[in-house]
Length: 376
Image (cartoon, rainbow, N blue to C red; front, side, top):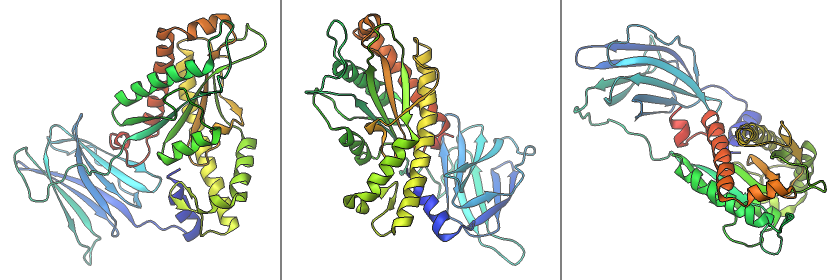
């Protein structure tokens, strides 16, 4: 995952905070509102505005919060001051404001008595200071890789009346992609968009090429007992992860690959192993959280085969740095469920449930530098 680069710094170099935010002061006046943020050291920062509702945001890199945030004396412009952690080490300060303001920021250098201070001036709309700021262009969409199971010469499971798993999964995947693309800040990538075969490992490799934040593989289960029914959601088992780690470290071509944003080609074998383990652990934790949200949404539209997320060593779940889940939408070998899977309306409900679970997960766990994170 993209967090691994930060973990690598912590692991290899030791870690010291660039600065502490020691005080936040709001100084209202008839013409403008001044906000002063006192630091004890130099750090990188960005200031920008957000709408819906209106906010002024300051992002500090490698900064801890040591201040008590003011709750009173904020004046008429600022209604609340709040703060939160980004990427584990960065600090976000948010000013909730009553309307859109023009913002001017000035960094005052340290002197003998105190450290540097970031000074914000909030002016009424219409005032245009020369260095007013707007949201940076670097915010990106969260990428969801959607994998329709089977395809081409591999039909997957076949129901009692001949409905093929590969047809069902592609129809649901296309519906899910449309729903994902309707969400602000989310973009869908279809691993296959036609009836063709793609190798299992090629599927998660394609997701990695698109820098996906989540991989969702869609299937329809089968069992010898035609009465078995219900949806299931799977994540990678620990044994499957261990086997995949060994495979990665053993294959020569992977030595030049990347885990998250960290290149492995110049690392010794021990460090490669540690970085891979950190990445897999983070990916598996995120997989479990996403799977819980998707399963909870599926429970609202029909029976589930198991009420808890299941573990398995499915090959498509083995990307070392992308959270990955596999959804068994129903048992296609159950005559009643096969019939439901053939209905367009039920496929839509399944896609809506998965989209709802995905949205809920990323609302709670938005990756850094994404539009969803910007709104938190």
